[in-house]
Length: 165
Image 1 (cartoon, rainbow, N blue to C red):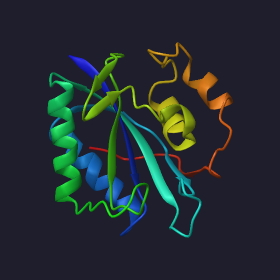
Image 2: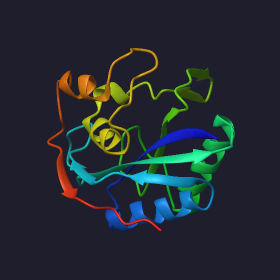
Image 3: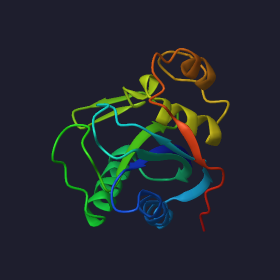
């Protein structure tokens, strides 16, 4: 079995409910191990979008990275995700943050997620689900990456416990 870490975010249509629905959907395909606290932060664009709610999910799977990508994109589509603009509002976003500490560079997929080191809303939930995480390219701990953030996007813990079945 391989470990996969997902980063999920939402800022539309009751974001906490959207996160719960996405976790429930992920649970149909993967053996969920841990889900982070829920974090709230401003948008990457720092514009007038509603705040984002983010979590990380650690799961086990026997699926390939491409199969996982297909599943996550299908879940997003089924939940009503429409990409209107880069870093724009969204019902749900499911990113593959890490896959078994492998380095994968393909046309449609880069793992570990190439922007994770700049995003508090990825790193802080990641630390909840895997505090011992070491970035396979940079060889930095999740805490070192958090310490090096230049902007935390006003991140706060919104909910200390996430319930998943």
